[in-house]
Length: 299
Length: 295
Image 1 (cartoon, rainbow over the protein chains, first blue to last red):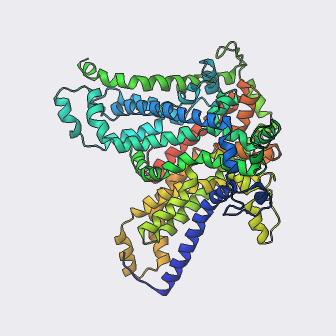
Image 2 (cartoon, each protein chain N blue to C red):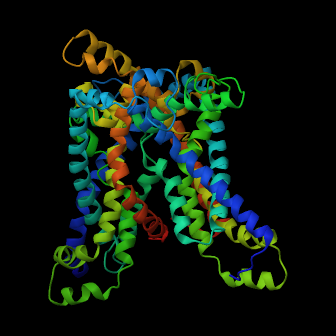
Image 3 (cartoon, rainbow over the protein chains, first blue to last red):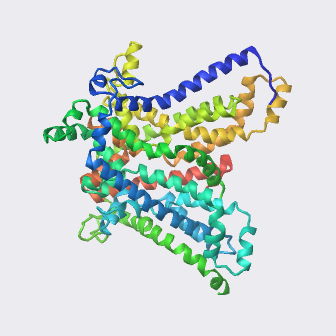
């Protein structure tokens, strides 16, 4: 583009930067406010004097949250669920995407398979039949109800398939001539070059599993089995009661309880619940655009 | 036969995926038949048939008819508003010459997109409360506190705006990718022809961005009946049911909380059929107007 600098252009540039900066602040400041509240004392928060910087700095809210056995247990369940769920996701995605990346000649009935999988992105039984099926299989109150129903995320599988298709075909040839089976080709030749693709869909799967709160709510009948996001969801409304219970039960939390209230406690819980996604966010952002572009290439 | 012998390993690899998809997608699909039955947990999908009486029942419920309108209203404004905000933001971002600055701005608007609605709803409940920072800021401007989440006139707009807030970073990335693809030669020749900046944006940038905008619009048509369960469930309350109750929250309360499985499945089936028609229709439109085929 030609570079011409005029007075009008400079004014526009300044305003443009201001607008963009304001929008960015609008996106980030609610989180800053949350963080400030979580590190402030209840009196400062109740007085409405905490904006973007903690007042009467205290770790009491975090002390309270981390001493809540249910919170820790829910976090462990979420971690377990991410490990099991994402491994299952990746195994199924890889095993399905590889044959489907072949041409019609290499895989008889390819288009039928593709329709079989893609159709599930368009129509589904909906909430109630799925719920009845999962309950009928006896999966309720087990971790399997959280990981089995979405074990093969078709959208991610399509992205992965397009990754494989973007590789030059010659990559496989040498191994095929040496008589390697498809499984050997996949494991020894393809997976090493597909590391970025695995990272991309793996990150999506991690975020999906970590963020999902709904399956926990419908499939777990006891709060002891809730994954973290479901626990946080239940706390949105009931943290006040929970604090009340702790207060009445006595124990060594009393001095901490005087420094916190529902708002500071909830802020700490939410912030802790957001940390894992925040940590992988830089990688997510890096891979997301790539996945978006590859996912849009027709399969 | 020779072909199959050579290929059986590929087919075998597909087997686990097929089994999972069959069990967890196709069996529930078959399970929608309970919409035509009076579901009995003991009999499962072999419960007694009742014809269309579940459908007659739901359409006689004023609460259900209300949810269709609410769903439609909320999601249409979410779609339109989302497109406008992300296109404008992408256009402004595109005017920035430094790639580094561009990336930093993009990083910030993109954060809320990856956090769960539980966390975002928790933040919203806090900042939109009567003594939250939003009302504090409005107070500085001399505006009386607004009940964002408990006033039924305002509630749908709170949903629309917070949803756009959470999601526009995604659209921005898509539009920015399309903008980067525009050939700079076009601008150069326009400039030689004496076209002003604004005319360039209007006749080159927007014109070339149109296919992407139409595509995004058409693709979101299939989602008109998804007004955002995760968001609304975590933010609504009985006082705003009148304007804030959507099909999905209604199905949840009826089907799961009250265990009226058949009625819940009927509402769900109604929604799936309409959504499917919309998806098929929008795919047709996308193909017709933007030359994009999803399938």
